[in-house]
Length: 223
Image (cartoon, rainbow, N blue to C red; front, side):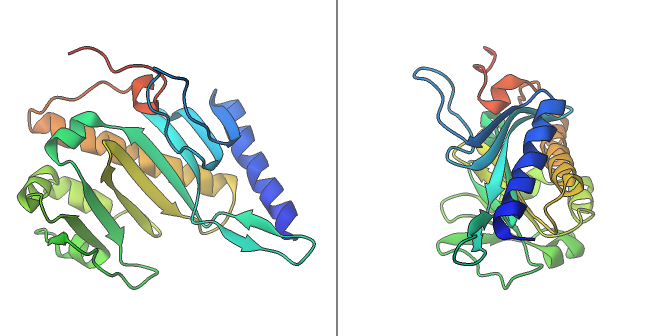
């Protein structure tokens, strides 16, 4: 299959998923109007925005794109899917962190980052977790309960996630460009969102109810 045809088929898969689930599809994601909430996945190809799966509002788009095809049939194809949601409540607990899968690539700890080790040997084997050097790693250890750590190791494939700029991000490395893979990526992103909210609820921390504000479609409810 030519690269252009493959890119077109993938765009069709994402667009049709959006149509069936009441999502906004854009070939390239733009910014929100002035005075509106900040948009997610700005500039991302094949952006979907809305309730991506039940209980998870946000945006997703192509990621880690590569150029493929010959001289007269070149196209850009994604090798991963990025999902994002606004989570200022989570950012109040730990402003930034990265959890990166060791699988599939040689991991290099980010400069000026502090490695965070957990009590779960399997989680430490599967992932490398870091926080910026100015943040206390204890906050992240306290956020991830044994139940969360056990669940994270059940996700199949290569995944990365974290929080940055008050946004939760989830990167799913595509094993194939198919509807089943798109659904798997969004379902796992939704589970991550719900479980992190559950971790905060159990700790007695403030959380916002799931809604369009997480997708940049409305202002967050007033406290």
